[in-house]
Length: 169
Image 1 (cartoon, rainbow, N blue to C red):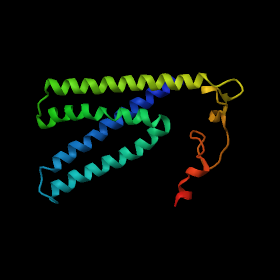
Image 2 (image 1 turned 90 degrees about the horizontal axis):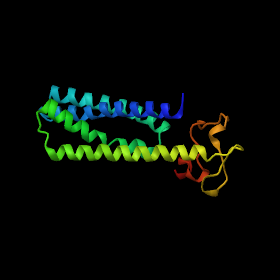
Image 3 (image 1 turned 90 degrees about the vertical axis):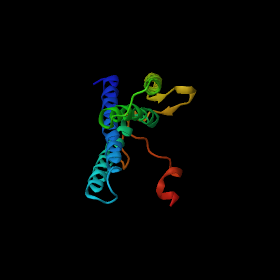
Image 4 (image 1 turned 120 degrees about the vertical axis):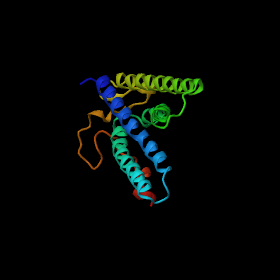
């Protein structure tokens, strides 16, 4: 599977995850229509908690595969889903201002994601045959071919000693 195909699948998974995440807001708004701690309120907030738990697990998988900046930028799409759910479920109006704002969000996400993809491609081409990254004229060993099986995944680079959480506490 090519890197572009893998990235596209990860972005699709991210957007499906964000679609589900946006439903937590729907359940939360539904809960607001019930008396505090009534059965309807508890059920709606139970749904919110389940959705957020699934989202948290899915988010961790996404950020393993995408740069955090890309994943986080794509979260803006929940604004568009909010407009959609508001109109569909709650009968809220869709104004020209909302449409323009949603388009601006989508265009911003597309521009950022395209630029990030180009940057990743450039980084992958800057690695020389000797496995040394030549980006910015700095020789950094390329860890993408690292086959060690230490406590840290080969997908993530080992944290510098000074940044490990156990040293801070």
